[in-house]
Image (cartoon, rainbow, N blue to C red):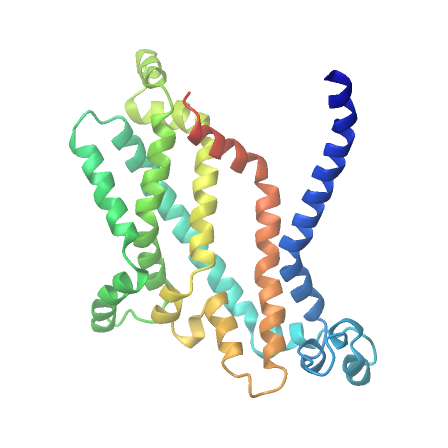
Length: 293
């Protein structure tokens, strides 16, 4: 049995390596293909005559003098001012994450340390609120925003995104706090800390990976949102996803589709960098949320 296992081991390793490589290629292909096509002209990348034109770029050579061109990025970032949408997106994401984590950490800690029976009912109500369709929640904000002349500006989308995201943040952080023994709080207070000092200096450093993981999910919610931002923001204050959709809405003009392709690559690349930078904290945070301490 041992000899047979040793003989199977190299084959199993090779099979596993090939499977992972093939899976990564398939998973990464849409982004790699979009990235490649962002440097072509529209008639090459979306050629109906020959799909190989997307690889060789004959019309791109005729138009730009080389197989690659940056016209899509120039048109999106300079001509259509996509940089404004990028700035708006990061402002929205920053305030949504900061607000959601502040309320979520304080609320999650309070609920995890509460001995009252209504705690679980508060969490269930929050979960029901999160399960409602976003369109239903957004429509409830439209009337007061119009009456108070608040429609179209960034704070309106931040308020709604925080309201939509907060139940999820509260649930996730509450589960992390539940895994931390209450003895840590009591030991800190015996040493002279107040409840808030114990929370700040003892509990938060222990569950920091959980905060980063929750913050990343909050960031992704705001970063990838379309319904809320497209309904509540004016054209001048659009974030990235509605801005990309506006490029696709003008497909009758040649080149505008390539603006969208270049904008998609520009919007996706930061997510890869973000996940790679915080990958250790994400893994440790998810593990801490799944295993009891």
